[in-house]
Length: 147
Length: 328
Image (cartoon, rainbow over all chains, first blue to last red; front, side, top):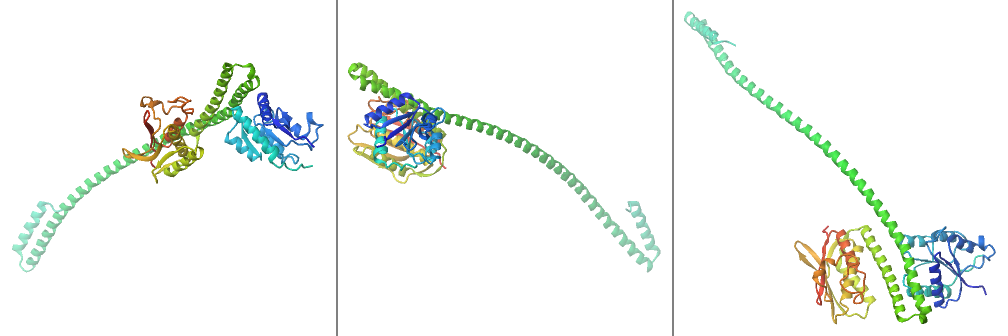
């Protein structure tokens, strides 16, 4: 049974810790893989660079993608994912501080599946993460893997 | 022209001829008399022509002078038109420059908001999250005072998050494009009331909305005005056993003043001047929630729509908020 992983693309270590904490609180026992910038995220998904020995058919169930990232930012990552047949249908949830209309528009323009704003209040954040987990890991039908 | 002497000579000749001849002399006399008459007539006509000539000369002189005046006036006008055109061109250049400056400022403000949106919230989330983590993970090692300190950190971070949102909204209101239309204010008020009732269905409030009140403004911005004014009325009547909120209009001089009236907690008129300042509150946060940005937003919107907003209140009796709008 292939491991159902969640890929978290987030550069802020505090946010990583808090997201992990929220997932634990929601009893989401999946493997969480963390990519600390856009380049590492693409390396992981396309099995290049540091991840060249990874099996490309093992895609994560969902990608939680922050927008403000060093090197390649979130929107560029999203564009690259959508341009590649392997990751074209991979569920991507934008998880970010920003509520700027320009950001929301751009993300939907490049076909994100969902846009969730990270609240300041941790309890609210934990609740959001729990709902995301339940939805994308349990309720949602994942797209079939493209070979 | 026969002179008087010539006429005299002719007269003598005629008389001489008259005494010398009969028959032929008679004819000659007649002819001579006729000639004299003709000459007399000629004299009279000549005098008339001379007079007419003089008059024409005078008129001609007047006409010339009038022409000169006209020419002067025309030259004057041309000079003035040139001057005024130059002035207008100057002004246009100035306005274009000012416009470019404003556009640049606006762009800066937009990118500033963008940074604030992204960058200020993350540290607040960290402060809130890890204060809670301390309480959850190390609760047994912390006494209630320590837990209280951490709670202060949490609520401050959350409040700051809210303040950031409010400032961004306020700045967006100032920069938003206005689309002016005939708006049914009563309709808008009803919409907002429905939303309020949906959020708190357990509240029993008497809403009295005067129908068919129409005005000229931007519907989106006016909706924000109602959300704030009716929302406030809703909030500050929460302690009344029977809450009553009205929307109507009254005549203020020669223009209509629209108002939202409530029978809630009211306010002290001494502090009325602080009502519309950002983040100024007349009540404690534990009494009524809010950051104090709502009325500042209302004032900014109403000002942009060409009107004024003011309020009257009495502690314990309620408040009325009035606003006017620019007529089309």
